[in-house]
Length: 162
Image (cartoon, rainbow, N blue to C red):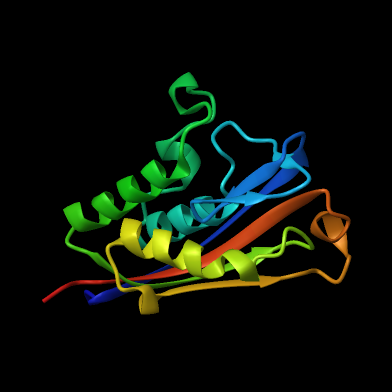
């Protein structure tokens, strides 16, 4: 039976490296570190791309933007997200809503969450009330809790527009 909705989930993590900011959900956030990554290392958008690609059964972000390809070095992850949304549209799907959780002790997300929602809504082509951005810590457990890195989880709902 064909369904008029699809759901995908995604996860990404990066270790911290030298730097003075991280990019999260397309927003430059001041921090005591940067991230070790081939692109801009935006774990939020990478998880969201994997959620959309998962709903489409098209693999993961690494398949579409391999880190071994030098053209993606330092790339703005927003272009990855816009590409994933276009893949959905090309197959007759539209983003319904997304739910994103950023995992780490620092940087604090709340002061930036509305800017993140605005950027994501623009790139996803949805209203801001269809974009949820939350944050949590791991209560000092694991690599995120030891402030060695940052991670994100995302869920995306796609629907067949009328």
